[in-house]
Length: 493
Image 1 (tube, rainbow, N blue to C red):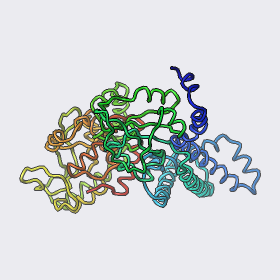
Image 2: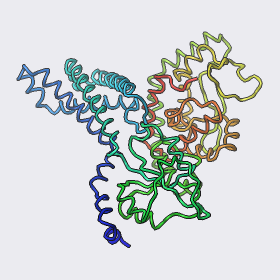
Image 3: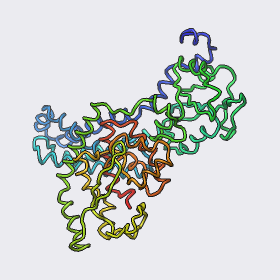
Image 4: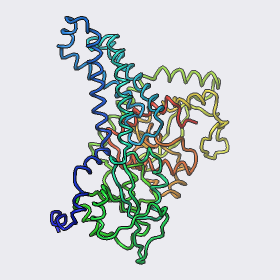
């Protein structure tokens, strides 16, 4: 049965509720970030034009000469790009960002500050690009006001239930209940609304054990596609506890025929939470799903970025390297090592010697037993506490990156003693070694410092998400947002 024949056979009520325009409007919310980026770019460019006109409003001749040149457009675009780069550094374009409205405003202020520093540096290096102090100050004021107002408005619009993706979950057991447990916050559900949970048959023919609250259970009488169209469902998430009864293939195919997305629970979590839920994932899903790009082009782009980024960071931070080395020598005295070398596990399980500034006493593991670093660890020296909080102890790993043992972005390398235990206890742990370990990583942005098996399990979900979805743009966004982690001292011990 083709799509036209199937739709013609539906009741008029189902065809009416399944009209394309409401669904298009709801799916616009899932693409809100792209719309926000475009709108903010235009607003920031407009702020420069507005500031220019206000600056020369009483001087017609300078205004005419200033606005007729193509340079004004280039200057406006440069201004907008620098400010948006600063906001990207503060994670303001991250899909999974959580926080209060006041916190977002503070992030925006810091992002504007970083963008301004970038602009002033460019103006110093290339004077023709400069727009003048008065125009710059007004453009920053207008731009900050416009962007803040847009974000308040967008939060209200995206929060409207009518514009969210309407989701039906097929399943009401333990697996389906993970949506209520892990995606329960309003910030987690900015892009979707769960209409309800429908019980599925178990492998034995009966209904699965219900864990979801009865008020959220829906009963589907008649064809699934008809019910979904009447209730304006945009996406069906398949997540029963027992799959032995088989997929309701005919029903799901009919839903796809009328334009309703069909997603399994693991893919839904990956998209909405930015992690791979280990309890939902089976080997076949990992084998046949998209991602895990390790092509020649990807390896070349990643290695190029590693070398260029590490050289730039080294050029900017070499004075700090000398100061940290001097501080360690003054605290520990002559004869004590400044650098610390430790064996770590790298690409495909190979080992290498990771280099760091020494932040602990030389007898930190005098009994030879490997230990996680704890909060307020008494083995950490006074200088060590400072350089660990600011992540300056990690800078010597730029040498590991240049040597090819590490990447600028990737899962953090662990010690072989920990890896052997974690690989035995945690499913799919070895998959994180499919890429080179990194100085920065997705797990470091999304999760606090890991110092236990439980922390390692949580971070593995984000590491696997990175391994599956890594690309050049993702690496650049992680690297930019790492600045926020370092500046705020999040996760340091």
